[in-house]
Length: 548
Image (cartoon, rainbow, N blue to C red; front, top):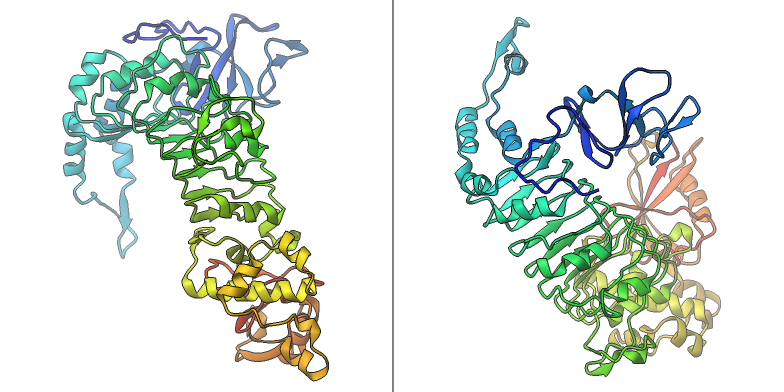
């Protein structure tokens, strides 16, 4: 339900609440919810307000009481019946500003600021520069950034007064307030002509946009956990001619619904789109962003994606109906400016998805951690394999891929493929698209799979030199050991060898691969996996820990 259109209103001063209204518990502005019922409750006198709280566990029931259902709440423990005097309908923007930046410290708060002397007596302290900082923030006309998160802001107040009070404000954080009406957001933005960054996270925004809000100066718009779907973003598009960053985390997005096309159009200045923590399950939805020509960073962490592919219809001046979508629109190179693609925490498991990343023309920063394809314990591949399969990548999972690591990874990858494919060229070409290219780059054309060797030569060609380091708390200080082992040795075999090498007793060893470029050691969890399959190559370091 849309709020009243009067931006200067003092809402519900007589504690009259309406269904759909955003409220917080009196004195607890972080306990925010939506009114779902106003009226009597059987067995109790007077009227009650039924609230469905935003956070799980903040209520006592699901909207029913003593077998009578009054409303249906989000969860089993998100609803409460509350007397109206225990609820607040919020304050204006400038009232919240006064509270945050001009409120004086109470005597109780100042009494709590002390240190203990050598004789265990309290000695009061004062923060260095405290009054200077307070004085700066109290001069609102000088503020360029303000955080009014969780202060119960529910309406803007006078636009002219906002403008005269905060003429230089560029960044405004309104996270976790009671705002819901897009008209109120428009009034705030009109009153702040210098505003370029606006954060409305955790404000439950109305799905209804009755009139186009004025957001023409906004460069960064954050709408995380607001319930906003792509339909609303399309409706706001013309109001955001300069938006460069759009953050839509945690909005349960499943579909991308362009207004009048198969692809998302417009957003000519958009460089960053954050769709982390949503519910997108098919890559076809992501392809709808492929014609955003300036898009450089795309965040898709923690969705439900299970594959990646590069659109076939991306050549300049080719009709997009070659993709089978029936449209006669002209399209240019898909994702032509995309440099960073973050896919952590999805369900991607096929190496072909990794290979497809080579087709993105400018992609160099990729996150795949938390996917089965990048988890050796779940049948995935080691870091060096991903590096070798993606030619232009400079950052993987936040770690730089330097020239040395790339060269080592590509050589190890070629040798791994040769050891597993037994010279089957057709299988290699199908499963490992970069194999022949890498053989040529690194002068490995004359090498043959190690399976072609025999006897002592076969054994020698399959040996790798690894450094073993004990790090377990009960193992004591033991010098590192350098050992030559068959690359086909399993993790289980190496664990038994470590017990012998270091003369360990009553210890269950746990092995980790310390790999260049990886911020944390990689657990070698699968006992039946071979060292070469897990990316253990020549001069690798294995950490020997103990099961706690």
